[in-house]
Image (cartoon, rainbow over all chains, first blue to last red):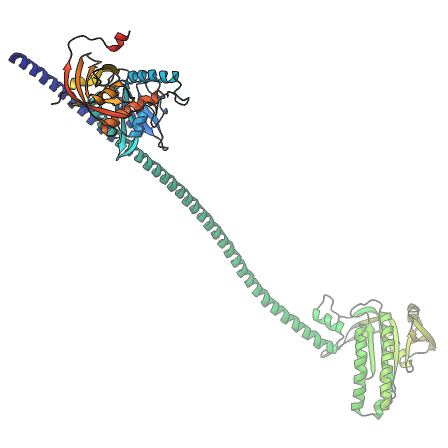
Length: 492
Length: 142
């Protein structure tokens, strides 16, 4: 080789070196560009698409795929691909199967440029073994994603801090399609890809976690809101309850006031009633209870006003009283009268008779005034019979003391003029008329223990009374004799 | 600077089978087609030991061999003078070759049957680019 040839050869080598240098620097720039693009996004799908686009468009790798290992650590799954009729995403490669599977198992890069020749060679060996019956049935060729007629394949494990996450693979139907420079390029790229994928995955995990947190937060917020709502509702309920209570309390206050007022009026009324009772009590001592009641009540009709009414009048006195009074001490007389009046008084009250007056042993009682009563005559007779029986008991007692006293009664019925009799300073309630006179006269005629009644009265009381005739008596103040009867007993 | 130039690498990807000539101790030559001569570094190549065959037997008796490799891109071919150095059953060279065989085996349903026993490492004594025309063994068979 002469000097000129040597120079030409040197020029050629320098030119080639420059070309290679230019190519390398371009590729390094491209890789830098890809790297920065990869690192600027955290969306895994976008990253992988970006990588494959760049590999095809910029570096001329027309058929490439990224496979990620699944959790079983036994399989890879095509996650993204470019340059295939069908994308083949999701296709599986088991660890140890094909170039990619072996790379996954060994976690080492592999570059093959003679796949078809090698396979042809092996298939020939296989055919011979099959002929010889040396091959077992389970040894069958596998179907792998990728080109059916791939001659060259370059597969690089994606490792993050020694941790295997997947495979980056390129392939070509051309033999020897990839050289050592491609190995270096893809190695650099694979490192970036692995880190980016890992970051993206972590980011996705974080995103997932963040989403979970957001959801939890939202739930918490909703819970808080509903709690707030519940608290509000409860507060409102409480307020309503409080208002109701206040109203009830106020009503109670009003009621208490009313009650207090009522109590006061009650006191007043009780006081008034007590006063009235007192008045009645006082009046009763002088008047009959009925008259006293009427006077106190102050009814529409003034009972003291003179009026005319049919009444039954009863006169009674003690036979032998005048003689007794003349021979006895006043204290004895008052004692006998006291006993006698007390017993008679009880019976008058029991039969609702009106005691008009009593004079010593004599008493005048009438019925049907001032308060009208039913059956005044019957009442008068029954009272008289009871009086006779009662006095008989007293007589037995008196006899022991030596007093000879017996009861005599006269009863008459008819119209009388009744009202206040007297003068300013002293008024009595009195009945004036023939009926009074007749009763007094009959009483005067009555022998001891006799109850004398006119025939006229007996006529109305025949069913009640068993009587005996006494005869026709000539009575003072009466023109004709009065047919008189003595009440022996009551019938039945 | 090693014996093997960079431009030879495409010829060592196994696209076009290589031919290897060996000789037994008693002087019997053997030429065979081999799927791939692996590039180890600029001074070494590796041949796969999968089945015990004449080539394996010969180089263990007589370490000298010649490999004819062809580039599928330029169809340039080279004669490599080789001397068997040692066998590896682990390490990066073995692993790389083993992976390739495993990958191809798995694709043809031959997993566990077709596998690398060892990587036979040869020192490359010379690499000579051919200018003459040769007929590959396959053509002779026809």
